[in-house]
Image (tube, rainbow, N blue to C red; front, side, top):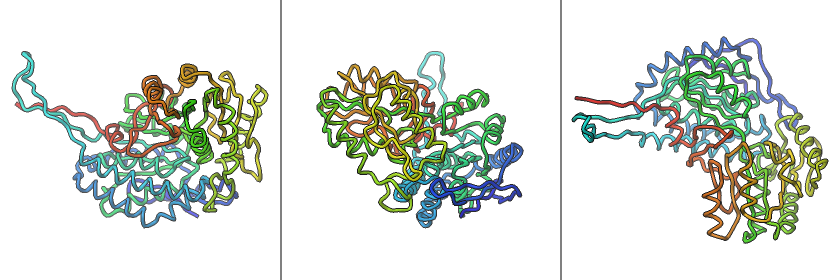
Amino acid sequence: MVEAKLFMGSDILDKPQKGERKSPYDGRVVATYPLCSAEDAQAALQVAERAFERTKKAPLSQRIAWLRDVAARLKEEKELFARTITDEIGKPIRFSRIEVDRCIETVELTADALTHLRGETLPTDATPSGRKSTAFWRRVPAGVVVAITPFNFPLNLAAHKLAPALGAGCAVVLKPTPEAPGTGYLFARAFIESEYAVPDALSVVYGDAEVGGALVSSPIPRVVSFTGSVPVGRIITQSAGIKKVSLELGGNAATFVEKSADVAHAAARCAFGAFVNSGQVCISLQRIYVDAAIYDDFAAAIAEETKKLKVGSPYDDDTFMGPLINDEANERAMNWVRSAIKEGARCIAGGEIEEGLFMPTVMADVTDDMAIVCEEVFAPIVSLVRVESFDEAVKKMNDSPYGLQFSIFTNDLKMTQRALDEFECGGIVVNDVPTVRFDIQPYGGMKLSGVGREGPQFALEEFTEIQSVVIF
């Protein structure tokens, strides 16, 4: 069990009131954490405000060494981090280990990207109104950063905020998700205990709406970086004031399986993309638009692939899917299935809870007016929609308030080009699922899926400001 602590900068504090995190798989208490208040949030921000005077002056070489040291610490404690993720959110252990590996890569990629954080000289005498000078622009640390992270990737998504923010020279207050306080604490500890750490650069507070609201509405932060739901994203944009706000919000990821596609390959990959991490991913495959010419074959193939997936204890190395985050998520998933069946859809795989585990579910004969394809499900449920053409598919895919990632399965090069031209989303994948994300890439969405981009190189832009300099 992890006993998470409150970090006010580099100082470890304790509070008498504790919260408990119970395993979503077996109900054990797997972590405790201090119950923080709005006053704690304000105190942490004040520490960060003072610390920024040091962080912005810290040599780049120190910040790069800091990140590399954190990556080394993660490698040494890989199994501890993986086990903690599995304990807190029920992610199968093999995928928790992958998340730790990805986190290490994210931190190392950020260290590499820092060497390319540069500006450009400008010819100020290029116009008649100008005159000769030495002029350039550069990137400077933005200031205090508030980082609020979600439960589904509690380590790597924290890395996508902490590594570039601290690497850029900012001071950070982290509020990890209440579902994974131990993971957030262990990760922050790796930064704070590093011999290269800038004193007080990172603080950690725990809590939900009260603490998050105090962090976001305070005049101290210059940047708010949030990953989570659209409703909370709306609240943040309304209460943040004049700040840089980076939001990675919901998705309703879709793919089109075109008639020239390899049906067996598409079905296997779609089963993976729909059900990995129990469908609790912003880019989980939720909508599959299938050409009518291959619809029946594809439906049979994905149902068969789904039934092969092992659902069970997240501590078994061969388990593909474990529990949803809580009982409420189970009931919400069942309501989606009941609603779709009532509206005329057919369940061809799953659709039930066995020993407390919601089974991966494929819904066939779904139509685009059903709620199950209009809203983000955030559960291991995928819907099959029959279409007659690419034009019909792209219209239905784009007819969504979300625009995070889409994909297409096709062996037609012209169809690929049309997808690149017509899909309205932040990321496009060809011949694989929209659930594909490489940490080196820019990642973010259009429409209600958010603003700003993650990925080390691109996140550094979120946590820095452009400063113009003219010397006569």
